[in-house]
Image (cartoon, one colour):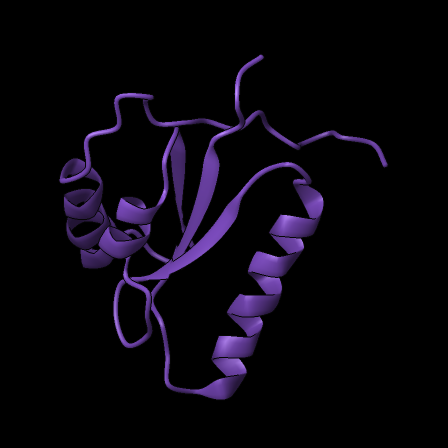
Length: 103
């Protein structure tokens, strides 16, 4: 049996408690929808933990999901560098699409 990869949700980070709550609720919703999958939160700026820290803490396959509205510097540089810096002998994970799932 294969182990599900850990999903690491990466957002920008903010000092605004409303924004922090919105991201926290989103990540909790993902966690609720994916029972049996480790779901971790990381940030590229302002908040902690940062992505390199979370990647160093997680063993096994990992899927990094940017929670950013655009594909700018943080996606193409910050997140890409953090992922490139962490070798994963187990590989990087993928998740099957939840599209069309009936509940």
